Length: 124
Image (cartoon, rainbow, N blue to C red; front, side, top):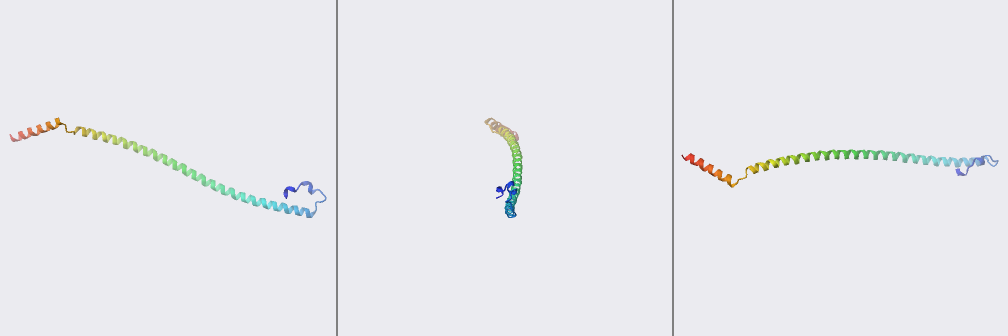
């Protein structure tokens, strides 16, 4: 393997062309393997970056949706407050007009007397 190669191995008299050729083949295979690993790593990094960008876009969309929901909730609260206020005003008006139009025995007696008096006047 490449890890077995040491600089002192190249200084010895036993370092023949054949041996150097074998070492070059080992180095070549190791470089090809490393190159393949780097290509795979590069592909994986590209895929992860793309995925990260998609995730970031999704996060931004979620944040925008949360802002829209917050604004809509605020608007809804304002409408609710207005409706409650107007309903209270309307109820107060109805209560006031109903309390004025309640027929009491005194009002009934007075109305009958007024009608009788008008009838008597019309006869005379």
